[in-house]
Amino acid sequence: MVIMGRKIFREKFHKVVMKKVIEACKQSYFKYAFCLISLLCVFPFQSKASSEDSVRISLLTCSPGSEIYALFGHTALRYQNMKTGMDVVFNYGMFDFHAPHFIWRYIKGETDYQLGVTDYFYFEQEYSERNSSVYQQTLNLLPEEKDALFQILQKNYLPENRVYRYNFFFDNCSTRPRDRVEECIKGKVTYTKNTYPLSFRDIVHEFTAGHDWAEFGIDLCLGSKADEIIDYRLKMFAPYYLKEALTGAKIKANDGKERMLVSNAEEIVHRSPNKETVESSYPSPLLTAWVLFTLVLFITAYGYKNKKSFWGLDIILFSMAGLAGCIIAFLVCFSQHPTVSPNYMLFVFHPLHLLYLPVMVWRAYKKMKDPYQLANLAVLTLFIVFFCLLPQKINLAVVPLALCLWIRSLNYVCLNYKRNK
Image 1 (cartoon, rainbow, N blue to C red):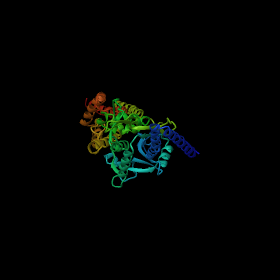
Image 2: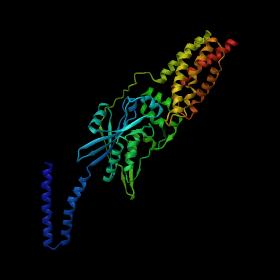
Image 3: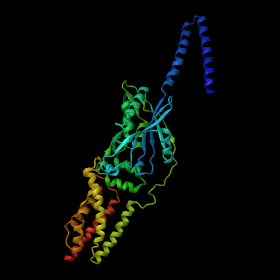
């Protein structure tokens, strides 16, 4: 019905205009007639030109999920061709969790991700089932820029190009789409600059809120470099910060003309708010650490009063601290992750606890002096007193854990002094 209406309107329009042209010619108003004829000539060409660009490319931003790998959200590129009916999503966040040695390679910073292409219908269905919102920002690209971007994405999807070395902060599923868009643009993109002083750790904490144990584990692994203030571009490693940067971004063409990078923004998948988190039923790391410290304090006080060392407790505490120290030391010395070194957590958790543990237990059993305990007491005292001054934000749950080790070393030194006296 709409098409037939347009056809009838066009026929009537041509008849009315042609009638005026003939009348103008009869009255020798050639100038007026020429203008009307020009209008007739331009009208069909403008309609054709407006329908030629049937391609739309959009940036998709997905809200965080409950799994640890989905806590920070996701970014992808959507390619639509209205003529061919093609509607696919280019996703740089594909990985195989069951790949050989995945966890080992992830710790070493040698994780390989790849570009995947999927039909938009399945992409939307996946995030709807995950209860995640999806926001679409249509990119205001020229036809030749859209063609160039599509060719870049096709080239990236070739088997020899689709796999890339993933880096959580510097080369991930958010930075890759941004870089590909910049490659196709004939000019320069100026983004909305988020100048609020933030570090990588600050942004991580923003998205791990409510997932205390995940945040605690990440804080143990990240070093002091994660606390350095980063610029607006580095903040785009997080999908939501990239979305925010694109909101007011502009393209400055080589000829000096400017246009907005995003022509339209909308929420295409709506998520129902869910305030409950997966870890809400578990005690927080901070509460757990203080409960442990209280228990250790009572056991230590009872042992000191009765001149007993309870070296079995030391085996548990120092072995756990040593194992955590082995992981942190490995990250510092061997991992390719750029923000894990230096890590001041090594003052509390280090491999020496584990390596020296047999000697520690033997000296405690024989009631001998132990210089290691005295040295550990001095180091932990300095850490507990001055941890706020370190160039690294320390998770508060570490403080009661450090106190557990501190009070055990203090107990050993005091018991030894008491015996010798």
